[in-house]
Image 1 (cartoon, rainbow, N blue to C red):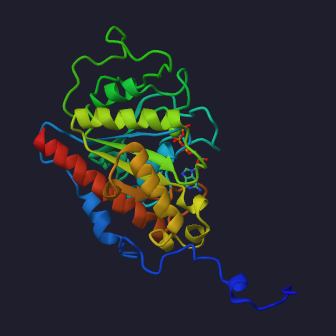
Image 2 (tube, rainbow, N blue to C red):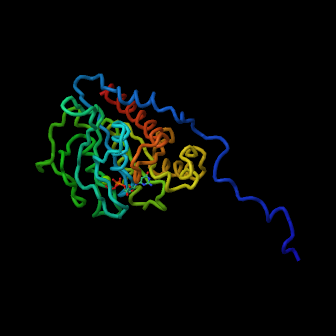
Length: 292
Ligand SMILES: Nc1nc2c(ncn2[C@@H]2O[C@H](COP(=O)(O)OP(=O)(O)OP(=O)(O)O)[C@@H](O)[C@H]2O)c(=O)[nH]1
Ligand SMILES: [Mg+2]
């Protein structure tokens, strides 16, 4: 008895993975305003040539890919200045501290945009691997020289030739951005603790701090189908709330993106999300420049 009965409870549809209305508004298909804003930015303060963005996060979270994506959008074509790994591994692909400048124009008249990005080794689980939070603090303060290879066992010491004793105002970071993958099944507690420490260090130095959630295409079938579902996806909203409380960053400082990874051409919706976060990075970083 009962098999084949049409009792209403056994035929209830599964709950929808998306909200009816997006919880944040995005002006899709209208990138020109944000692009001009970003391309036209210049720090007012004459002692600062460029706004410096320091990115950090777990191994493989998409740090180098994010820098490449920004570079691609500003240059209007896919660019690969920051070597990204071919696949995610548990060892950081980026070991060296490097500033990425984005070229503006071509040939002899080419200049660089006044926003630069510092790529850093990934955070890893455990005590003897990945970049140390203390080294990230030194990078924030401008003490790490270009090309330094991070040592996961000991932080850079003042005696080391790679230690910059007298950083200029534009060698210091003006905004710190942590990246986390929305696809990471579980971020290890020890990695989250390191991120929490880095967030505290940035607060002590009063440097603004933001979070970017990457790989939203990989993590949620609704956003994979259509990026415009990003703020309707219940899964992504939950992930952002979890990361917000884990690292101690308010929701209004967290932005989801899809990085360019396999594409050979730019895509308007990918650009919309990246430009929207880039605009905030510039605003928050510029607030810090203005008050320092
Ligand atoms: N689908 C998808 N893949 C991504 C995205 N972002 C990065 N990836 C891929 O994830 C892998 C790791 O990306 P990387 O940019 O090298 O990550 P990273 O944080 O610089 O890694 P380490 O330098 O090793 O710490 C690469 O294969 C990227 O192509 C994204 O938003 N979506
Ligand atoms: Mg990298």
